[in-house]
Image 1 (cartoon, rainbow, N blue to C red):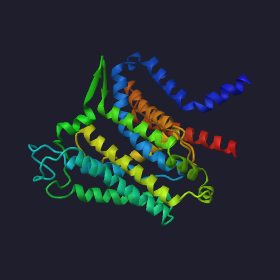
Image 2: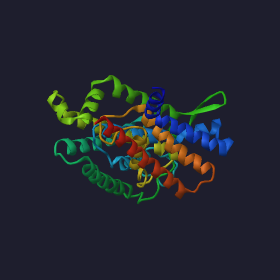
Image 3: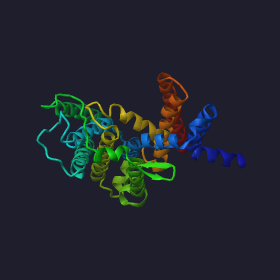
Image 4: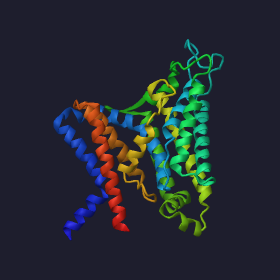
Length: 335
């Protein structure tokens, strides 16, 4: 009985155990890894990634997938950055644009993400195109749209820089609590995580989302308007990608049309490692957060101890495969 309890505990908390083992292992090899500066850097690097991953989690829980997330991040980063440059900057994207209230370009970028997410939802729900194919198509189209926008005169595909300080402060500014600095971007990410947790666990949207992912036919029979909820869920995911794009531009102090490339794969991997089932119907916000932290610790920690980037990719790939295999095994045992 005690052995079974231990097995159940390990099964239910495997993601957190892996995260703890990673941190301990790196700290044993390099004790200076444990420190406030390291924690601050890991949290800051995780912030935009966790917002993207939460958007992807919405889709995965319904039994779908979203390959367009990264390109939406890139598009919204370029849109927000192009409208929030200083007047003194020599290569302004819009030379005659007055200094806008900062919230306006941010809202525009988020709405753009929401619209493209809605388009994904309509293609999947109304036209019955498999999510993989639908979002693959929009991924390519969004990159084309972004590249056309980025190549407009007078910018002509030059990296967008010279961003206003009030905007870049969103990504690099912080509040100080004793010796610990908490970045604004981390506070925003924590707020988003809390809001998404409430949506997952305390709303009809969350209940119906899990029902759709668990058994779409049963959801239809129970009276759930599946098409409406799919469009809504994809739209919310798109808005989250839009917010992440804005914060990524603010964090890095610029943007190009290649921003966000492959971010969707990192987000899907973080979700899967964090316990979001590839078969739909299962997933939690704390699990997604832990999945993102695991990959950030891998990238940051292994670089910290001098492990080359190629070995990092091998380790990440092995973790992803192991997580999916573990997920499928749990699903098969339930069946």
